Image (tube, rainbow over all chains, first blue to last red; front, top):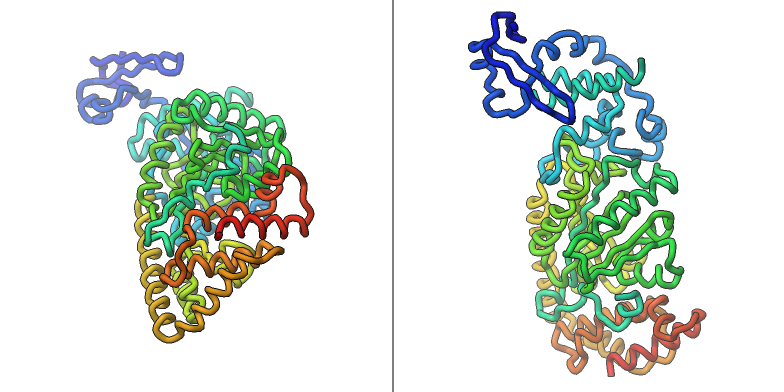
Length: 167
Length: 348
């Protein structure tokens, strides 16, 4: 079996049960050493999967894309948000992310939370409910970049789930 | 515990009588929270609202901290009880209007209450009498942690707690204080102070009634910004703002006494006389007069009237309270008469 990362022969094989699914990771010694998150994380990562195919690199054209029109979860339209000034559900926040910055800065002078977090807070909460495929792919990209491999796994699984549902 | 049990109690937020609370009557900290698995109340249909209600109620009822609390289904209570609870600051008009799937949980001492399906799925509120934002926050924080271990809150690390209205996003905390500022109002110094703190993102509005005139010289001061600051910072800043108000109010009071004592005394004694003798009194007039007598006690002009009685007066003179006391519906005239009678007994 070859290393998932570099295709050299693998000497380290990890298998993990996560959310009822089996996940495996095969690494050679040098890649295992380089993957520092392996030491702290109990969720091994199928790096090959993450680096190929599923991740959707954000093209520069995306930055010029129009704001999202509607929340897939609750159906709130962007116009409604502008008129009423109220969100419809938790998913509205990532959906209308581009408009959110200005809105929050206008009200609070900033757009970054500095307070406490809930006891149950995990990336899983947000990802598991999300139906916004584009956003999930952006998040996956960011998660890989910042080496948050736990989050990357959740995102990858959710993306697969949604893509399986739609096909 | 049921709603009628509350009738003859003063309510947590009016209990204290030490001198500091002469300016600050009560402190309140409120947190807004939503669940991840359902649209916000304004977007949810009746079934979804009821599901959220069931989920939250089940969690609360299973929690030992709420063993002695009162659990209310807003679809089951009548209009009078609804008004009564609003008058006691345990819930808002918005909750009363949104009935379907709406609920209210009140702790035995009325210090803590949770609104279910108002603007957000949960609105947690803790009230303490006097200037006690820091201790109120300590207690509320623990309750919030307990609940967040059992309910999945809508939260992202970038935006914090996700609320229906972006004005609440982030910490979703509102810290507010009810203050009595007759000195500042009577010396004409209130406007510049309110404007100054407005620029610092603190909002101050009359506690009773609308518009610029604060009935009874009671104001509510609260923070406006909930994002980009920590909860502790909000508490600290708000406490700091309150301390400025207290300083300014005390200074204004000593100015009044030194420059205008006889005029203030006259107003206060007249107010006392009216409260002791009137047979018909509207709630606006009652609040103005009670405010003056309260001021009189603070200035050492009036004695023999109990602060606690006055506090109870603020509650009992309100329309729903009076009707519960009379155990029947009263028209405006009857209320004005009963109000006068109740007040005469309180200030006797």
